[in-house]
Amino acid sequence: MASTDQNAPQHPLPHDRRHPLTVGFDLDMTLVDSRPGIAAAYRALSAETGVEIDVDLVVSRIGPPLETELAHWFPADGVAAAADRYREIYPDHAIAPSTALAGARESVAAVRALGGRAIVVTAKYEPNAKLHLAHLGIEPDTVVGWLWAEAKGEALREHGAQVYVGDHTGDVRGARVAGALSVAVTTGPCDAAELRTAGADVVLADLTGFPAWLAAFEADRAV
Image (tube, rainbow, N blue to C red; front, side):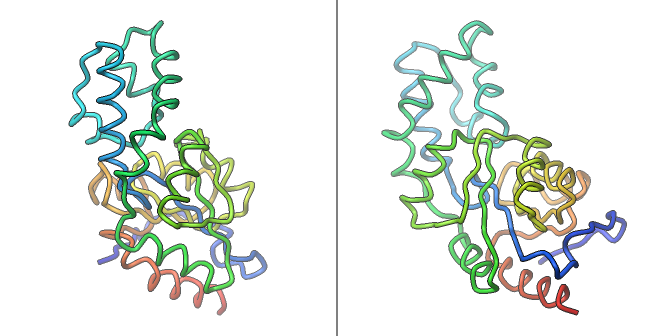
């Protein structure tokens, strides 16, 4: 069930019909359940480097940039090399095990059905993000990678997104920097209370409710 923050600031774009509908989506734990794949990639990295990594802890807090997570396990002067190696081995370990989250394909299709554009803005390395989407048959109009939190807002604003859908408080911050409506789903590491406190305008349990919400949103823009 969705909830809205009645005290959220007014955003200039969502109800302005002059702007074509553009919806941004986060990738990990918003469109894609990448936990099995990320776990496999970290296990491979751990085995290769000999560095012990608590994989269960890693996948419980997916969202921030790779280097942020690796800094918990590698010395500061080893993080960059570990990140490079992780991205190299990622396609062989992480793509096949990862699955589309419930409602993901339908949500992207719902944007298209309304004549809009669907874009993916993610902290993930862009080539690997594209591999996930191609493997799962999810085809956004644009994919922008290597952006986190407020930096996502710059890309969202550049593409004229009125809505950004994500699962992390960092996604909420990105939406607000862009002046976009923040739609949050609780399929990632942040619960509904955290997302509302961060400033999410709408909170959904998962993406299965997003197409109906989007139809109402677009109808409201038409008024």
